[in-house]
Length: 194
Image (tube, rainbow, N blue to C red):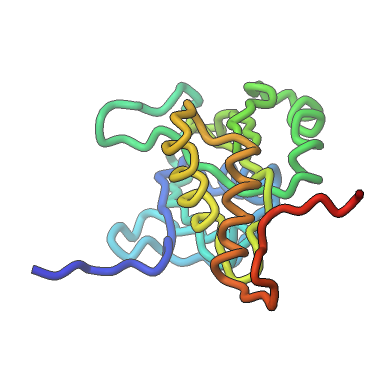
C-alpha cells in the first residue's frame, strides 16, 4: 500500500448564499482579489466564484442568488469544519481589531497562541474565520512547519504545556546549526563581553 502524497492545499470550496454577499466579504472585508467565475459544473443553477487569499491558492464559493445569507454559526459536529485561518502580517494583525470594529464586526479580540496571535469572527454565513499571525520568521531554507516541528520536540523534551516564544527561538537556533556549516569548532554560546 502506498500514500497519495499531497503538495499543498489546492483550494477550499464553501457553499455560499448570493453572489454579492461572497464578493463583499471575501474581497471587500478580507481583501482577497476576485479572480475567476464560472458556472458550478455540477449544478448549472449555481455560480462558482474564485478568490486569491494571498498565496496564489484559491478559496472558492458556490453561490445562488436565490439563497439568503444565514448568519447563525455553522455546525461544529464531528466531521464539520470548525474554522478557516488566514495568514496576515504583524502589521495587518495589529490593525485588525480597529478595522473589524469600524465595520461593526464582532470578534474575539487578540488571542495569545504562544507561537502566533489570533483573532476570530464569523463571516456573514456563520463560518468562523481566524486571522493568524506568526510571531517568527523561519530561517532561510526552512518553513514555518519546520520551525513548529522542532519547537514541538523541544517543548515535549522540556515537558512544557504549549509552544511559546522560547521554544521558537531555540528551534530556530537548532535549525540554523544543523543546516549551515561554520568554520568554528565550537559553535556554543560565548561570553563575548569580558
